[in-house]
Image 1 (tube, rainbow, N blue to C red):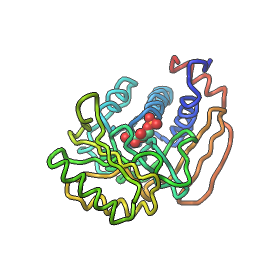
Image 2: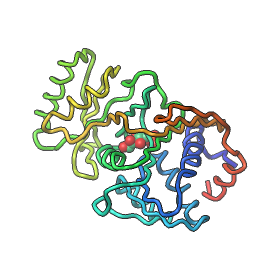
Image 3: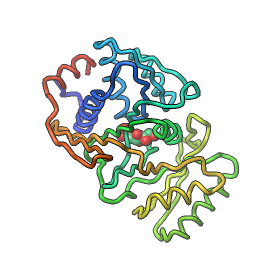
Image 4: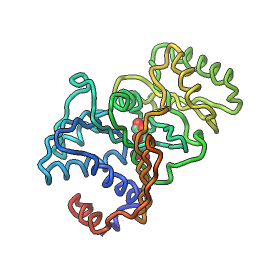
Length: 262
Ligand code: 5RP
């Protein structure tokens, strides 16, 4: 039944399936961006239809908005709402403190705005995203196109002052052109090998005038849901400090795969 799903996608879909259990009728839901979030949006569309839920969803990117509408979810623009009940989003890396690196999909600014205004921020990922120390995945930083070389050089100075000895900064490309975010900005990917104090790095980066936002999400994750391709799910309630590990209902998973037409 799940033959066409890769191991990583099985894990992502398992985490996504579990995450939508937190959604209740009448909620305002922030929708993340990326492949794991896309699975979650498809699960949420099904759940809303099956349970006749009245949800209002705030997408964090144009691609998420398109998918949400395709699966029948009602979306509104972020400028129509101040607070979300819950946001569900993916991550590129998650450390033991539940600090996240995000922005691999280029949506970090909108993702951070929506996550910061949510009563509950749920992070979903395949368990391969868990790391002891952040840094192996390049840190995305969204920057204004104006004065890009100046911003890049000032970021390099900041990294030097914080003793990031081994470092390089790459401009993310989309073919032959710089990648453009939905807001028209660019992304610098910071190769740092190891991120020490994420809170300090985040605040120093955001002091550079051309930096719009960085991809470190510090103290933002309330619940982390991590799954592997065998159906084992670890749920961490960060605020309460407890972790539950159990197995996903594989009959429900197979039924979901069939309903999604995978
Ligand atoms: C997009 C993100 C994504 O959540 C992150 O890149 C994870 O992506 P995926 O779910 O495809 O592995 O931060 O800006």
